[in-house]
Image 1 (cartoon, rainbow, N blue to C red):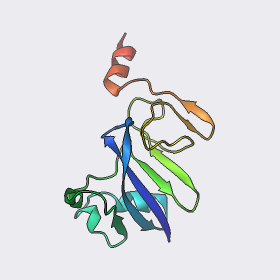
Image 2 (image 1 turned 60 degrees about the horizontal axis):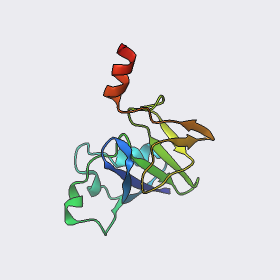
Image 3 (image 1 turned 90 degrees about the horizontal axis):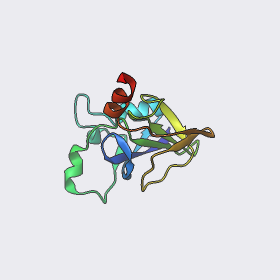
Length: 130
C-alpha cells in the first residue's frame, strides 16, 4: 500500500492558478488512487482509504472529484503526476511532471520534454479552423 497526495487545481481545468493539497489516499496504484478520489456511488472523502486535509474548511466534505488539471504525488516514486487538461498537445494524458509548483504553472516538463500551454481548448479550435 502506498500513499498518494491529491492536489486539486484552484481553478478547475488549469494548472495556472495554483493547487490545494486536499487529501492523502492509501492505494496500491496511481490508477486506484485516482479512482478512490472520484465521486462514484458516494462522496470520495467517505472512502476509508482517504484522509482529507484537516486544514480545509468544513465544506471539503463535498470535495469535487479529481480531474483534469489536478496533480497526484506518488510517495513511493517521489513523482508528481499531472492530469493534463485541454490546452496542451498531450491533453487527456496522465504524465509525470518534473517541475510541479504548488503556486501554479503553464508550461511544464515531463521526462525532460517541454510541453507548452497553447491556450484553452476553445482558442485552439479557433486556430485549427483558420
